[in-house]
Image (cartoon, rainbow, N blue to C red; front, side):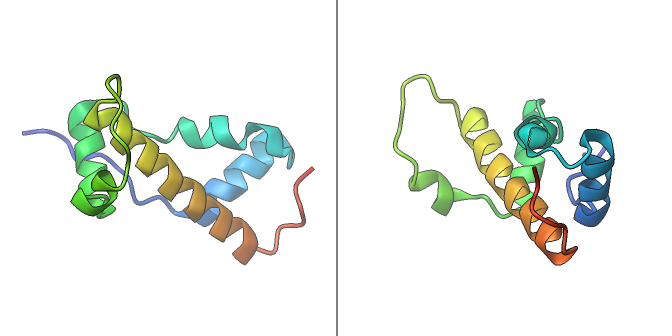
Length: 98
């Protein structure tokens, strides 16, 4: 039985961690969020299902010969995480990043 992957982060804590780690510099947001994205196929699939990133979103993306379903799902998870990060940042009233 596989261990469940944590995907539903406390985005306020994530933003606090980011701000503390990078002193409010926005240059590292993409790298920071990328570190939260699952890399193993079963975890990618599990997170995508829990975030409801199903057939509708997949069908909206143009096909590309080098794009696997897992790469596609990682991209969709990244977009979702970036949105959640940004929402938490705004909700916290964090001044504009540098």
